[in-house]
Image (cartoon, rainbow, N blue to C red):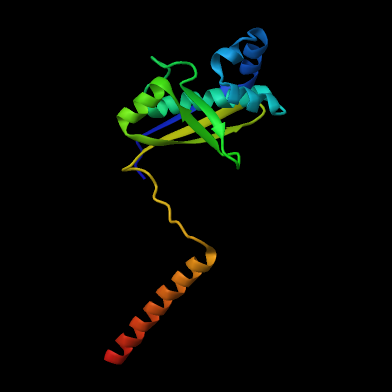
Length: 162
């Protein structure tokens, strides 16, 4: 699959921990309230803050801009009901994405005890993965049987013609 842009970033968790301890206002200046609530509830908040920061950098790299001209909160991280990370674009980042035709930024975040890493892939209409939608398992199974029956009927006809 072709992509509009891809980005990756790594942040050392101890470095983030030191920044948070040394500069208490850093959290409020850099992270949204949603991010702060999420990170502060985790067993290792510094790891979560490092992951959110890495995600921002990865998204901005995927957009091809870096932090140049961006507000500190123009990219943030939220999570869906299943915990999947979501890239939230506002301000200048949202404008850049719209200008590039970016419809979605896929985000993957992980961390060890030492580092947090994030990957981002920017997707446009031309590069977006088209997903099959099945209304339910019964309908999907019925469709598979129809296709199999059609194939068997074709084979029978070919046998009769031979």
